[in-house]
Length: 338
Figure 1 (spheres, rainbow, N blue to C red):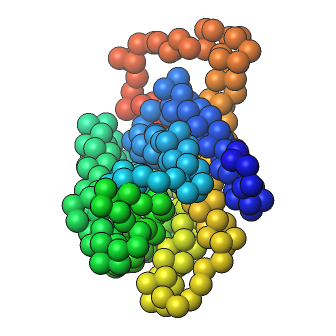
Figure 2: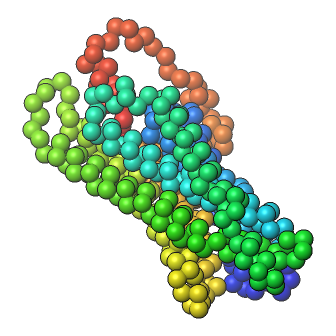
Figure 3: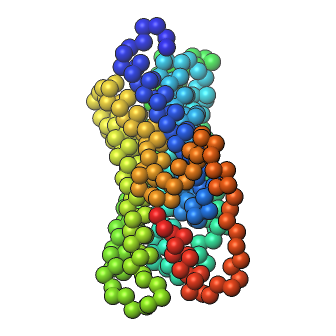
């Protein structure tokens, strides 16, 4: 670290390094878990992989850049702007991945018998691609002109003739964009929509659980009981995302609507740590709340760390031609086991 670095900034850098390591390792394990476990290869976990990839990028790319910026690096305006836009793209991709997960779980509860026919792997892949394309458009909007370049030119004290700036997020990103377009347009509405979706999911599940069993072949309470457990886990992921990102957006609102108000450095660093820390918590939630991930993580530990149980890599094969419809339906329910 540079000599004479303030203790608060030194602590911030250390915490960022720890979060970066946890984010990369934890989310790489999530991706590996989906790859080696057949039971995790459905549409919901496809969206979870998309979320994990965004979190890996935060740990491997965004946090190192944030640390570099925090020490007062002098860069070209558009270089600094590109770094800030990368954060915006990854944040937006996380929000849209969470929204896709919420819609997926809603359809799973609303149309359980025809779900696998409606939500195919191809459609799920297209949904992931669409989410990333929208995120890129939304996140790169400042690169198209909605930034602080003109105001810095008018000010004349921060930008030289070579457009060099002391790189900071607030220096290059317009607060009008962050509050009116990003927060009010692409963060708050999806969060409120997801809240409404999960409320409806819990309502439908409890309604089904309270029904009497009339079919002796399949107990619907078992299916909806598993859906309730997974919905709670994914709702927790959404809740942690909201409490991690809302403080920083609230500070942005204060900056825009109250220019004379001061945001203490400690509060700003805490808000930034919360946003980056969110990338590290999701694998922990999956490990403690979802049995499939817990089992897959143990398998990864044995395969890649202890070098044990190599046969676990091989998928189990068997003929499925002689199965009845009831047996196949029962297997679909068992595949959803948590």
